[in-house]
Length: 208
Ligand code: PRT
Ligand code: MG
Figure 1: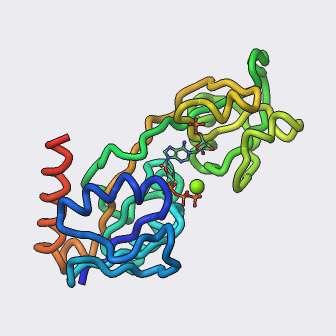
Figure 2: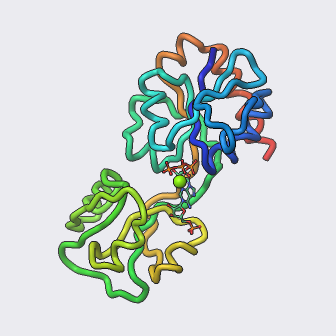
Figure 3: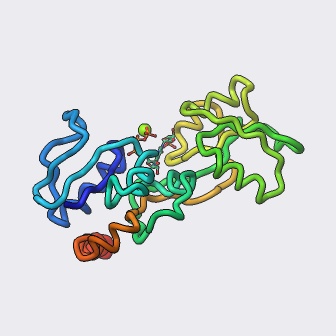
């Protein structure tokens, strides 16, 4: 049995065509079904539906053999413990700093609100900027508006969320897409099954 960990939001939607091409059709739809383990049209493949940020943890511990996770999540998790053989080029966006529109650049110590604490720390340290990182779990855009932080580090796609809150994108930290990750032991123990799935995913990618 191969277990694949996926989050149920946009990654699931964009990963479906890859799964379908590999002959994997989930029996239930996670949008309407509360099951956390989804059987599929293939007897040897099941999906576990979890929070995006939990995908690397499930795969690292071997609770799932494979997973699909955003590079943002993998960077923050520290993905040395996983294989990351494939960039699926789905759920693409940019990890950026953002600040109130037209606000001057602040010199000296800044306060940054983000859920990407480690990635932000690494980024500002690398640029020699003294930053106090404030961990939030959501609604980062609010922080500069109420004086909690000078700027934020968050994902940007269309930029509409920033704009709606009077913020503007500033510096690109990294282009983000979703990656296929594989448990290291599973890669050895279930090599054939995993390799054939990898080949199929790669074929789908090449056809795009
Ligand atoms: O558990 P959680 O709610 O965090 O995740 P989820 O269950 O909703 O997971 P899912 O499947 O939606 O995947 C989240 C992953 O999608 C992220 O880890 C990214 O790799 C990827 N992704 C791609 C995005 C976006 N684009 C994106 N735009 N994740 C979030 N956003 C948010 C962003 O945080 C901001 O609030 O959308 C808003 C910005 O969008 P624009 O278009 O207004 O700029
Ligand atoms: Mg979400």
